[in-house]
Amino acid sequence: MDITRRRLLILLPAAAVAWKFVEAGTPEAAPNYKLTEHWWAMLVDIPKCIGCGSCVRACSEENDVPDGYFRTWIERYHVSDWKIERPEVESPDGGKQGFPPNEISAGKDFFVPKLCNHCADSPCTQVCPVGATFVTPDGVVLVDKSYCLGCRYCVQACPYGCRFINPKTNTAEKCSLCYHRITKGLTTACCEVCPTGARQLADLKNPKDPIHEFLKTHTVQVLKPHMATGAKVFYNGMDGSVR
Amino acid sequence: MTAIIVAPRPSPVSKSIAFFGNGVRSPAPGQTILFKDTEHLIRLAAVMVIAVVAFVLLRTAVVPHSFGQYGHYRGDAIAEAAARPIAHAGHEVCEACHTDVVDQKKLGKHVVVSCEACHGAQAKHADDPASIKPPKLNTAVLCARCHEANSAKPKGFPQVVTADHAGGLACDTCHQPHRPKIEETGSAKDKPATEAKK
Image 1 (cartoon, rainbow over the protein chains, first blue to last red):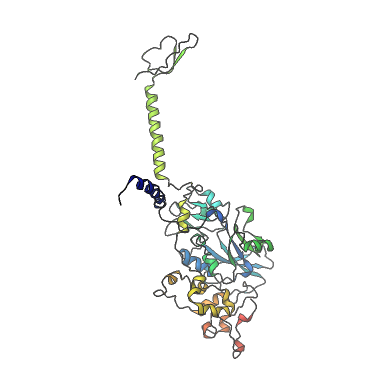
Image 2: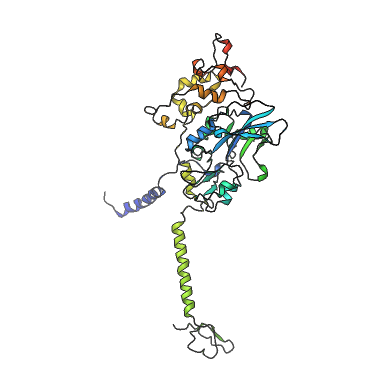
């Protein structure tokens, strides 16, 4: 085909349009995911938790969490009848292998799964000196591993003890709310495996999410509300003794 | 260096002002010199300009281009976090092939239990079912994690003291894990605790 002036004039705009796609490079990991259309949270239904540790094991496998460190863990509370202000809390190996039978004594016992609260006004992101941790526009607190210095400010700042320094990378690590899953339309690993539905991922910006009906009909609480962190892990049926 | 002198306006009233003087020549009549010995000032200014340009160039080179896209952090970090591979395939993926298990589970209470709660992360198996097989499970350990009696568990949840209930036998000796309730009345004494209301 000879390139005439007429053909060139037709080809040039077409090439310009094609170049835009070339320039765009590799497509994003989640092409249909829009950051501004979500606001992620989690619901933990304490009366449903059986302390089986499935969530801890799944989290560990999904996120390659080193042994002895936890992005999520389960605590067993024992609140005795008379020493109500001093609950006994235990979490053997983060509850990863479930809990051994306990001695039954007067009082009440229950499990509390813990994880990053993905605070809207998170103390950990405020103290980071280099901008290595941040709240994403869809409400998830993430750590930029390649930017983290490992200074441990955030580990100290988190009132919930949800952060640790990964001994292999020497960078801060925490629950990412399985960001690599939720942006692909999946639920988190812990919610996927929870056998009783005690954990449920919630998208507060999605009007069809069952969380809205649940919040209307139940009284939920967040951990340490007096810290004003804007915590987004909602606990149903939580005892006042839970720290 | 020659002095830069603002040309005096031809006005008899206003005095002309020169900004720089070299200190050698005395000011012309009717002239005010603001700075004397300007050479070092110009050198200083040049050094500062070079420093500012160097800072701007260095900053552009060092700070990632996506820093500040959404806030005080590297915007690309979001896409990087989202791009990680998954380990748990999700029960919908399992159910696409294992329809026989789905049918079994529908008949019992374990219908609500996701496949990977017991079988572990199986995304690799889902990607390559022929060569990567899930490991065999030890029901004596696995079932006990959920069903071992514990005062902290919800009262309605089926629990047993496995030592008394099974006496060391693996749970799948009697129970079918996907549909755990034992239908036959032959072993009524060992009625599994799954009878209890959930």
